[in-house]
Length: 544
Image 1: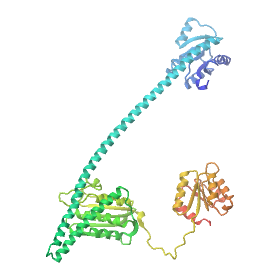
Image 2 (image 1 turned 90 degrees about the vertical axis):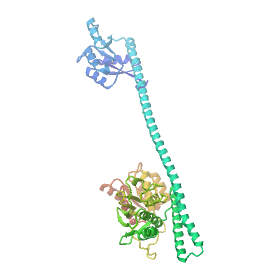
Image 3 (image 1 turned 30 degrees about the vertical axis):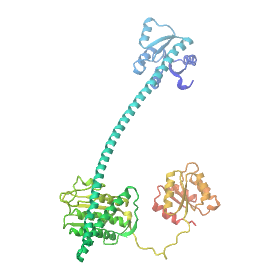
Image 4 (image 1 turned 180 degrees about the vertical axis):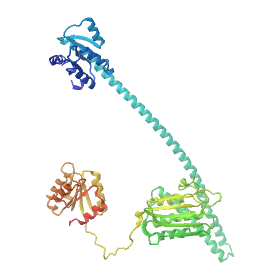
C-alpha cells in the first residue's frame, strides 16, 4: 500500500515500548502510526494533520489523558475525532463517565488485545477513508459547480459582446449602405456636371459664325471640365488601389519646393477663380526628402483646392513648410467657413461630406481627404485637421517622419568612391538565446555582412567548418560548453588562424574583460550591444 493511502492514527504514551507494541499490532491495518510521548507532542501533531483516531494513555506525567482529551475536544476541527483511552486498570464508574464526557469512545486495558485493537481501529480507519473520499467528492463537485458558473458567466459575457458586435456591425452596414447610395447619387451628379458644358461647348464650336475669341473660351471650358472628370476618375481609381493594397509608392529624392510648386500649379485655377491670396513660407535652405513626389503633390493639391472651395471669394490661404516635431511639417491655413467640432472627428471618413448653408464647397465625391490621409500614412506620416469652429477657418497639417529627410544630397564622385568589396565579411553569431542570435544576424545582414547564427557549441563548430567565418561573435554563457570552449574549438581549426573572436556577453566586470583578453578574444562587448558600437568595431577588426 502506498504511503498516501495509509490513514494516520495518533498514539500517545510516555513509554516507548508501548508505542512499539501498538505499532506492531497495527502494521497490517492500513494505518500510519504517529507517535507522541507527551501532551505537547500530541497537540503539535494534531495541528499539522488530521487523524482517523487517537489512542491515548490515561496516565502520563505532564498531563493525564482525560485532561488532554478535554483540551483536544475544545478545538472545532478535532471535536469529532474518536479517542480510545488506554489504562492499566479499570476506573470506577465515575471516572469512566468523566472519560466519556471528555470525548472517549472506548476504553482499552493494558496489555492490549491485538485483535480487539485492530478491530476497533479498523472501524475508524474505514470511516476516515469514506469521510475523506466524500470530502474529495464534495470538493470536486464544488469545483465543477464553480467552473460551470464561470463558464456560464463567460458565455454570458461572450453572448453580450457578440450581440454588441452584431449591433455595431449592423449599424455599420446600414450606415455604409446609406453612404453607398449617397455616393452613387453624388457620383452620377458629379460626372454629369462636366458633360453638360462640354456638350454645349461642342455645339458652340460647330455653330457657324463663332468668333475666334469664343472658340478660345469654349476650348478652355472643355479643358477645365475634362480635367475635372479626369480628377474624379483618378481619385476613384486611387481609392480602389488603396483598399485592395495595390497602390505602390515610387519614392525619389526631391526638393520639397518642387512638391509645393507642383501642388500650387494644379490648384491654381481654383484659387485664382475665387480671387484668393496665396502666401507660401518655405525653408531658406534646400530641403530634400525621399518620398513619392507625385503623391505628396496630390495630397497638398487636394488640401489647397479644398481651401479654395470652402473659402469665400477674396480669402487668404497660407502654406508653411518647416522642419519641426522630429520631422517635416507642411500646413495649409485658410480664412474659410471652418469646421464644426461635431464634424471634425469624421472629416477624413470615406464618402464623407460637409454641407454649408453658404453653399461653399458643395460637390465632390467625398473621397479627397480620405485618400490624402491614406497617402500620407503610406509615407509613415500623419494628416490632421484643426479648426476653432464655424466661420473661423481651417488648418490641415501634414507631418512626415524625419527619416524621409535626406541629410546630404551631394552626388558621390564615382572616381573617388571606394571600391565595393569583392565579398561581404563572413560573421558567425553564437548565442543560446535564439531571438538574440537571429536579430543580431539580421542586423548584420542589413549592413551588408554575410551573417549566420548558431545556438549552441556543437552547432557553432559544425556550422563554422562549412561557413569558415572571418569573425565570431560569441556569447560566453552558453548552455553546455560555454563561449570559451567554442573559442578554443574554433582556434583548433587550421582555417581559423586569422579568425577574429569577439565576446558578446552580459558580463561586464573588469575581471570578465581580463579573462576574455587572456583567452585571446579580440574585443569584449556587453549586452545589449549598441549598433553604433558594434559597426565601427567590426570595420576595425584585423581580418582578411
